[in-house]
Length: 260
Image 1 (tube, rainbow, N blue to C red):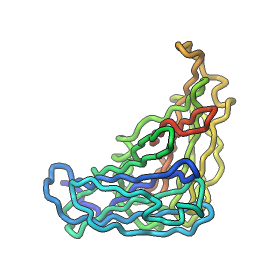
Image 2: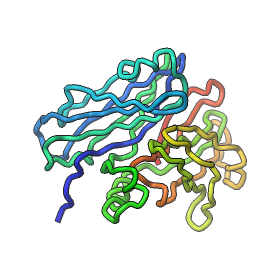
Image 3: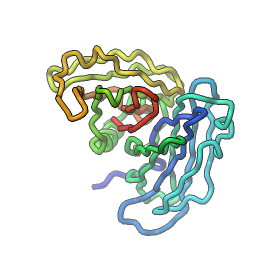
């Protein structure tokens, strides 16, 4: 017997706002094989260092119709006041209770004069109150596990063309201490990343020491090292997300992002 469709679903992402990088968010509300175009409510919530968490409801959303917005249009303070890395919640809901929006997708486009990159969010999960997420039920944990099976494997890389950082997002009002690991199987070790402040997004560069025991591979462009990065099951909640971001080591421009 199928579980009841959640009243609302959401995903947690991050965005960048600098003098040279702006963000666009794209989303596609879908319910699998359902082909109707019923109204969908989309709420974007922006939060991070130096700004108060604020939510904006977008008009005109429809099931099975892609949509999007430039974040500075939804949040004008990103045009000149706020700068840095911020967290972003994308929540989708429908007044039709039988519609299951868990298969919806969202993506962030980081736009700069040099190039644009697009990355997909962590899978949508049922939106539940923070108190319920702190002590999740078996059903919530199963939904999270089902969603995370669709996630990519995080790989930290180090060579002359790319550096890697870990981006962690916490949309709750409480401090979160995540469990992050590097390595494979029984040899996996804890990666000390500290705490994530309430309603914040933070980027942590992966230091060279992380790759000291990693076997280098000879490539056409020189030596390259790779290390698996993973998140402990106890750190998976509807209100946190984790991404691996790759940057150009010289310009520091983002070149790719992968959800954990």
